[in-house]
Amino acid sequence: MTDPTRERLHALLREMPKAELHIHIEGSLEPELIFKLAARNGVPLTYPSVEALRSAYAFTDLQSFLDIYYAGASVLLTEADFHDMAWAYFERAAADHVVHAELFFDPQTHTERGVPMSHVILGLRSACDRARRELGISASLILCFLRHLSEEAAFATLEQALPWREHFIGVGLDSSERGHPPEKFARVYARCRELGLHVVAHAGEEGPPAYIWNALDVLKVQRIDHGVRCVEDPALVQRLAAERMPLTVCPLSNVKLCVFKTMADHNLPALLDAGLCATVNSDDPAYFGGYMNDNFIATFDALPELGRAQAYALARNSFEASFAPAADKAAWMQALDAAFARLPAT
Ligand code: ADE
Ligand code: ZN
Image 1 (tube, helix red, strand yellow):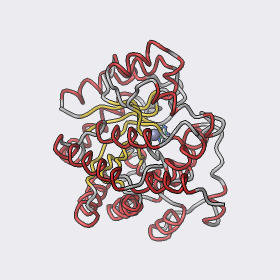
Image 2 (cartoon, protein in one colour; image 1 turned 180 degrees about the vertical axis):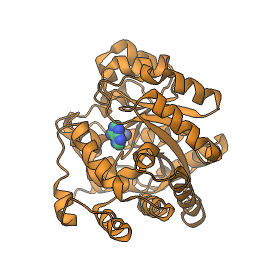
Image 3 (cartoon, rainbow, N blue to C red; image 1 turned 120 degrees about the vertical axis):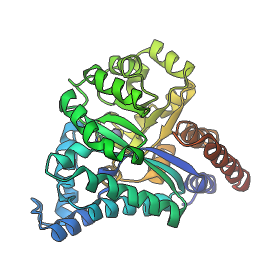
Image 4 (cartoon, rainbow, N blue to C red; image 1 turned 90 degrees about the horizontal axis):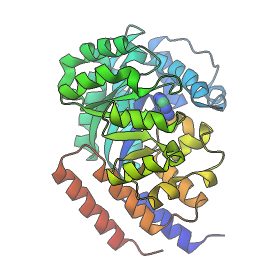
């Protein structure tokens, strides 16, 4: 049975322009592309088929996912591989009416295997340039440090990337959160801020609210990636709301990694009700069951508190929270208003 009200809400979610601010580009690598690149590069895989690999995507927590995710990234060797991966993402993002994307990439996952930094950055950059030319998507890159490695390794990675400084706009912090608090990276973040880079960090995905406080106070981040555990600390929620500190929330990821038991348990409505600048994002879409619109539709279907007003707020927040120029943000917000005026009320 089709429900016309729900159909209209789905159409709105699908067609409204939006920005994606939390996508690990290595997490967009679909099993089919993993097999194609493995064959192209002669890299052996432990799984015999695309189906066998996909069926291994049953995770119990963040670490159980990261083990498979780093294995999948081992097929990436050449500049063309990085280009092809990002281009596949951009084609998918365009279908979801993503007009701006800020892509995380994990250089240490590749340089540790002997892949030159130039292959990683220039391959991704050429896909970003092509996305603007051929799809009208504005795109930029954010270099992430792996937090399970040392701060010294992060400094070395930053040094290696600086010859391509103009190709990335900021730095982030990802990988295993528990046991690797933000303050471990205090000095490298200070250096990144001196260099004029934007700074963000994963915090409060599996880690406690203290990690969010320290991402704010020690790393001085401009956005918190995930941040959903902030609700455990009312003073923290109050601060995040007062500062309009963006949270890049990833609903399908949170359910797949067992941060929430089901989508109906997700706290996105509570975050919005608290006045937070929450956004919806896909994190690692090839592994977690969907891209941007899949995330929007899964959350809105499971959470009856979410409707037209929340759809508008989430899309608007995504532009507000982006690192794009003010004129671009204003143009996207105008396009958002036009989409809402065009699409019938639910
Ligand atoms: N790297 C890729 N996805 C991640 C996530 N959800 N959390 C931390 N590190 C990641
Ligand atoms: Zn992430």
